[in-house]
Image 1 (tube, helix red, strand yellow):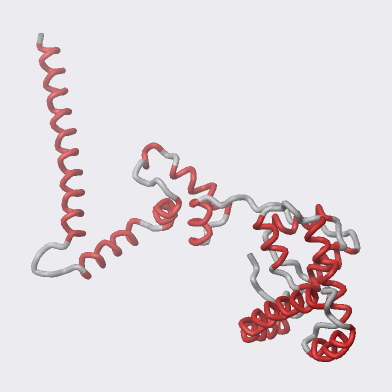
Image 2 (cartoon, rainbow, N blue to C red):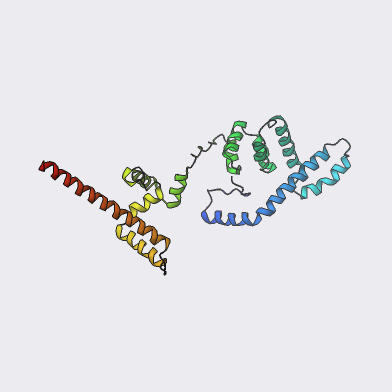
Length: 255
């Protein structure tokens, strides 16, 4: 979710966007406190105005102080509209929807009351704060909701991290599904397998041995010995099987 208090238009130049982002970062803690305080003060003030015991003299006297805080008659009118909207339209809606709605300032909440409610629900489902640009497109009836992003799998995240595009991923998938390469079971290993020559692989192994060199064999060297020893044993077993098979054939011919 975008928690940026100043929504920045992508139509601005890159330089302007960067400058506004820098300003937003500096103002963010203070703007958040200001908006929360202004909202709380406005609700308290509106409730005070609506009480029957509040005199017109008191209302008239306090008005200039409130306007200095940015709480004008127009702002209070918007707040009344928002409160009515909450009572008549948002009653019974999920708490997450109400929290999303309240995360916007009164001005934006007011503008949201003026657009199609189905569009408001779509914006909530997208999980983003509403920008002024979006509100304008809603008023002009040209808003088109973003297509839902497909859920990323672990493989998607890994390929994105490694910079593997879709074309190479399709190629690597052939390696992963190759039954003769049963030890290579993910895109990262497949990427290394197809990208390194034998000489490069030997250089890496030699470097690993050099890094772990000491008076005793390191774990990497021990594992390498086991792998080589395993291959030697398999080769010797196959040779012995071939010798025995040849002797069996000769015995059969001799009969």
